[in-house]
Length: 492
Image (cartoon, rainbow, N blue to C red; front, side):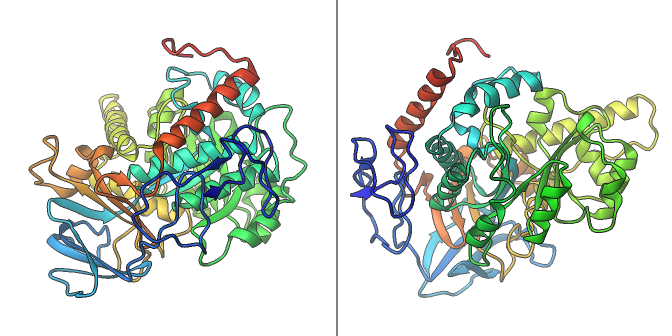
């Protein structure tokens, strides 16, 4: 029997080494099929067992290989060899007699998708506000009403759910924008969930948004977190979600952390202090970047910051205009990445973000042409869109040397998508198929750092029935505690 330190009937967060509270929900047997040997050295969670599924060598055999590396050729039929956690070779007819062979025929083998901005703690609030178009109404519900009542348990469950959904959708890395770090215990709960899921993540620690939240532990908790998580071998790392607070930024920079800032409209203003050498740089991630003044774009470009955009969310709230943040970033020589942003209206689906970016950019640029702008930017290509969902996301996370392409020596973050769906075949243009036809249901296999997390269309070692029951209980608790009224048939 596996004990979880998160008690599902209590608000208590049980610290490592403490005696767990015994209850029907806090003790759950390993009810999923045991198909591998348990690995006791690894952390087990309530929803997954760590099995010794490690094969020293894994060979993806006979697939369409889409590398996204200009120096590693794409292949109509080829193989990818993985040794331990790294890509060992990409090529035709690779020989690896001792490898576990994954039949990739009828599939596209490609780098894992990278979600460069996602508030994973909102997982329990899925589609609670599908029609919202007012940012302040949104904040009132997610922060003042529901977020204020989050226990560490709710942080754990929501993050665990979002991580599982991400892996299921072919997302192997997430920049987790957590603006509900109510206490060190809440942060630890989210980080535990990420680690136990097996996803690669950059968890950005940010103050809770509601008025009653305490920020006394920030930024003072960052050194503890950096020491625990920011190691060379860790799949999960920590940064700062810091807005424009230079004192907080300095703490993060002293710890060599990345810094995330929401950048929209009136918030998108930088004082002269931000123009000082070293304040802005590749360590910065600016999200949304809607309606940013040209002089600010110039400052961001000169510093080489990272920009992330959220096509569906930006449209939902009406953040953008015809200048279009993605295009502004490109025009200034930056490499914008794609993020999902929130679950209150959407969910973990980077294919949806790619569809949205392709259509929105082309619509915005055609509008500028029809309006008489002679030198309006060219329509975006499917190749640029896919790069925004992979290579650019890796750069935003500071991991471009490790992930984002199928390059020998890089980490083995690989997905395999089916081409057998009636909506997909025949595959005439591979990149166009991935961007415009593939859906999350077509994701067959997901590997992170050489570990299989999804195989044959099924998440590995995840008890979805238990997770569903517990996330539903968390949602019901939050609604009851907050007094917020939810009608299942009427959108908030």
